[in-house]
Image 1 (tube, rainbow, N blue to C red):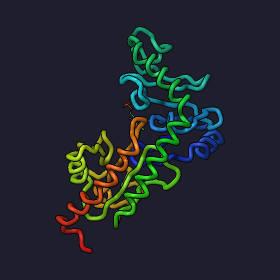
Image 2: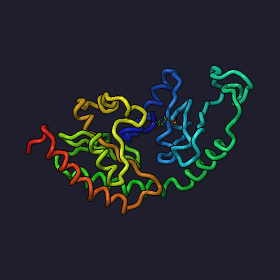
Image 3: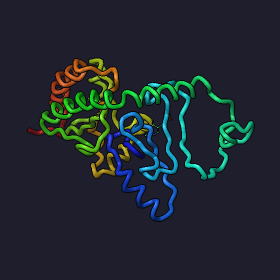
Image 4: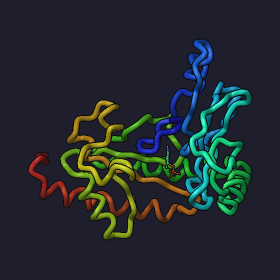
Length: 239
Ligand SMILES: *Cc1c(COP(=O)(O)O)cnc(C)c1O
């Protein structure tokens, strides 16, 4: 994974690419989160296969792309009409594909502008929210996606926090979207060494092109009170 969808960490892809090349191992990277936020040169990074998704970069849902290095032969995953060079049969989703192409074109053109906008807002979130007592940043402090801020709050539950923020019109996330129906703690948070309580006390805030400084200030103003309210009810909280 090029950039992690939960905690935003950007992985050392160049170093991994050197190792896979040296040992003649094929290297696939899931760049769904990174594309448009991190410059990606598949040759420089020794990436053999790379996947991206349209709707994560402001394109329409239902299309994605897989970069396949010339000379690689993959097994067919859907037989039939032989579309996608025989690799994945079924009628092309033309509007989705055209939309993905346009989203990439725009994303490349405005990447610097997007990244600087997102970084500015993200860093306000990180600075202000970390100043709430017993609140910590999850993930790498610098090597992280420009749109991602992820926190751990001692003695409260991310789900309760998320509900109370929702009441105030703030959309956040706990765990990963795909697994939040499960009650288990996020495997990513456990893998970076958090215990289940810490993992359950975490919250992800992500930003997009349309996020504004006012949005961020609203969150930063509302959050401390909500955290305090929940901690006042929490048997785990003792000052
Ligand atoms: C969203 C996401 C996917 C899944 O892409 P879809 O097109 O929504 O199925 C895969 N990997 C990462 C890192 C993602 O963020």
